[in-house]
Length: 267
Length: 253
Image (cartoon, rainbow over all chains, first blue to last red; front, side, top):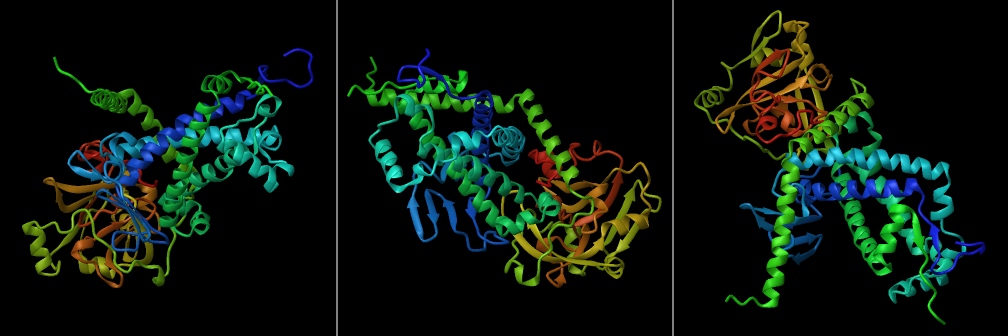
């Protein structure tokens, strides 16, 4: 970049600071392993409940049975996707989606609780850094103008037409990014961690407020699952957006920090 | 010449790549280096939980209105051995609990004697490692009281429970450390939901160690043994499921 005040399309700008990049990749690995080992743990009892207790004879709100997913009154056939045959038993999530691939609750728990450290320790460091260095205020907090329905609608329709910000406007996160990243950092990730702790009988003794917060262990298990599905949905959209917005430039910016601003369309 | 349609070719390439990926994952999972790294995580979790938990921190206790309408049974539901059937037939009148190992006074107690000792009643949540939870009321003898009566030797580090039920021909066994053994809610339960403990739930005596998962709650307890190390017990990992499928010995999470 030369002496110009504002960078333009085609300029390379420093976009992601080192702590953001470090956390992004540590977290990517952790969430990947947590999701897949979590699906294996879910396979051990593919039913979800609300309340203080919940077992086979109690009322569940979600079940995965051979070839079917039931959510409340809704039963959806899921052949070859959910409730499939593997190694002589029916598993809710198929082998390609789980760690380990074949039914192994003990192994999945070993992966899940080891990688929980990779989720929590870098996560807490990132949270602390973001607060102290005001990353969250500067880069993630939506401006008042951005939250007006007009602006939101404008961004949504631009995204739907795959028209992404260019030039100087691409330097900062747009409002949909801010909402998505904010949800992940302040709702979904704290949600999975706290509900995860609530499922631990040892932690329920140490920190009884966890159970009051979520209304019981089966409720915490349900919320844990929903947060995890929220993270999975985020990852799908996130990866799709990276591909659509130019995967090489995007991935490079998350490795080196340097991002080439997309050129303005010729007008 | 074998002619492959494009769709079949792409399909089999996809399946091949998928299979390769899955077997790659299996290789990573079975690597000893990976497993020892995961083992470090397990140790860290155990230590961290012990650091943030007061030794006497109580598992949540519930009210009668919170109890599961039906408390399911699981694992072994009836030992079914000739000796056990004889005990059931005469109401456990000749049954004896042995307390031995690293104790000054080995004990042998009848069920009537155990029931006449001080008792604790608690409504607690039973969490299966598989993910379900059930709330029930348990009545029994605090284990710490029994161990004090037997006079635990200073070399003792763990308490092992030997059971009457066989899994794959092996009597069930479990173990806990002394922090959990002397925890106020750790009891040898002989009553459940206001009734005498039934066969499905572990009659005549079942361990309740409320800050851990279901597989630690040994049913059909016949013998309580104090030991210095778990090395000589079963496969050495401290419990039946720990030895057979690798469940974590510390089941507080």
